[in-house]
Image (cartoon, rainbow, N blue to C red; front, side):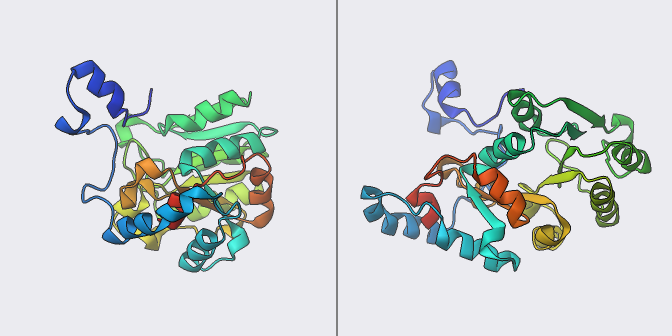
Length: 252
């Protein structure tokens, strides 16, 4: 399944200007980006003539303050999609275990790296809920995998119950798995940030992916970040191209 949001291809196919139709193929905040973002972009235009901060210092400090972690426990990226691919590359020595149906990019990124992929599929008869003991037992039967999950899940929209997610984290720690938890749509859910594992990620040995695209309606800027233990992030940073996050995205 291909990504949504390809307005240029849609405009060519429908022979209409891109701004003449409404795009329902991507889940973006319909209210648009905040005024403060527009002001930040205008102010940052003068920085386009020089290289952006390769360490994303201001970005890291802002995200770290939000989640009450250290700046070296934040890894900014060119959107969450880049962070998915960096995780797959850094963990290519582990088979991937994907809780599905879910975002197709997890499997795509792992396949590109030659990583064997297995799926634990939720049943449609149960409303695609992943909150079951059978799924936990299947994760517990494996060892040293990269376990991929999303909360809330995309495309089903199902939230993981907090108690069940706590059990999943414990199982992953016990079986030496690395859990990659994608929270790209968390701000749209009931409870929002209160459900996030970002603050706890460094202490619990998991990797949390956050996207600014959906919540702040800035898909064109390509900006997101990962939260996790410094050692896990350093392993991914080695594969990241320099200046991955441009000056405008950092300012926004």
